Amino acid sequence: MGRSEQIEVTAPAKINLSLDVIGRREDGYHEVRMVMQSIRLCDRVRINRIAGSDIVLKNSLAYLPSGKGNLAYDAAVLFREETGIGDGVFVEVEKNIPVAAGLAGGSTDAAAVLCGLNELFETGLTEQKLREMGLRLGADVPFCIMGGTALAEGIGEKLTKLKDAPKFHVLLVKPMTGVSTKEVYTRLDSKSDIAHPDVDGMLRAIDEGDHLGVARRIGNVLEPVTRDMCPEIEKIERQMKNFGCEGVQMSGSGPTVFGLFADKDRAKAAYMHFKIGGFGGQTFLTEFLR
Ligand code: ATP
Image (cartoon, rainbow, N blue to C red; front, side):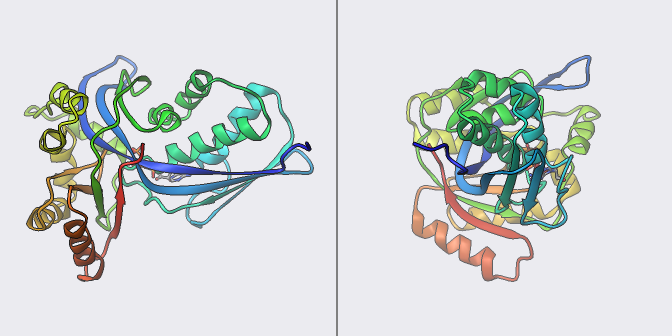
């Protein structure tokens, strides 16, 4: 059998079912406790071997960097440094995940490139090794390599695989505004009244397969901060509740809002409302990915 010349990998987005910040380290990083959930919405990454020794990146969004600074490119550089492989590669990223949205779009591209190159070049790096490499690119990259449902602690790198969470349909609505993760965390640091989510309750609900318990315990310590910067969040949440979702919450540092629906028809009706109702942002109907 000849060696393969091309590989295609899907790069799923994530939502945070629960996100708490429990401290700030001396190096400025925040210590978190997060329950992460992969969803079906994904970017697509194709990698081809090419002659020469260049890394060539093409991505479908012209405003993202096409070299250094694009996490897909940086991941290819890191992979070659770590493995000593100098072959040329052409990396093509089809972006479907909204950018700067709290859905780990960049991190999942990086994860897909690391895993894709490991397979294409048959380098046999373990998942643990790939996760260590991924952490150097971003705190969410190790989870994106693992996927599914997981508890992330430390700065996001201490991962515990959880039972699959009870399935929900997920309606994502991203307001027009993008927010900078850094600014959200900086604002959090100067806040005194912080409402922490019930992460342990969420872990119990997942362990017990308690569908409604999961929906009731979603929570995000960053939401009040981002809401101050992006008032549309509250409006979107109110409208989603009117469509009968079981739970509604902002993902990551935002500003994307997700609604968890047990009932597909209700989810579809809400999707159509945001899609055609003159709402200016991006809307997706997706589901948990295991
Ligand atoms: P997180 O949930 O991990 O905080 P996010 O969804 O808020 O991530 P990203 O979509 O990953 O944010 O984008 C954050 C920044 O990273 C963007 O402003 C963008 O310039 C940069 N970036 C670099 N590479 C990529 C990529 N491949 N896809 C998207 N953004 C990228």
